[in-house]
Length: 230
Image 1 (cartoon, helix red, strand yellow):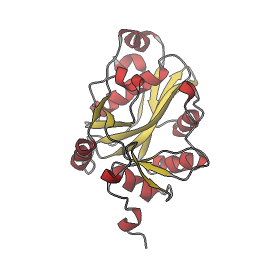
Image 2 (tube, one colour):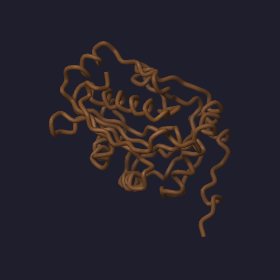
Image 3 (cartoon, one colour):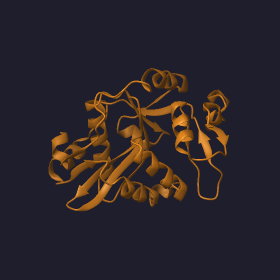
Image 4 (cartoon, one colour):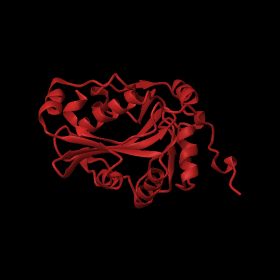
């Protein structure tokens, strides 16, 4: 019989300065969800053991505080993109796994793709898709628990497509009364869009207050022109 103790992690204040907390384990649905509830996420490369992280500070986005530049507003109005949600989760995670921008190592392994597709089938993971006619040109995916969305990765095959996906996520977060989007790790790109750093303790307090709270609307279905997001 599986018990909650099987998915216990070390106390998060035992993480290294870089945020590494634990090594090993598996990517079972139960362990992954337990990790997210404790403010922990997996991040490792092919050939490495599973590495579990809880960084200090934590990079987050507050729904409604996304910064939309003048050029991005123009893209939303004039690009002709359309947005969907939860229609192409497998395609989104596949595209994210092939990212090679900014010299970033590919870290979404086959096991990770399978694990998150399983979470999607169970209703815990979600995707935002951006389309140009019938071509998937951008998107993102992550895990939703209570009123917190844990962003995992995004991709873009056309200019601003991943930013448009983030606008769609922000729209959904506000519609569903979410309290936080966890971006996990800092980047100049995220900060330019309104992300901020908060302390790990404050992040954990937000999780405590929101993980067990149901969202206002459990349906993620959406299909519309991105111009409707403005």
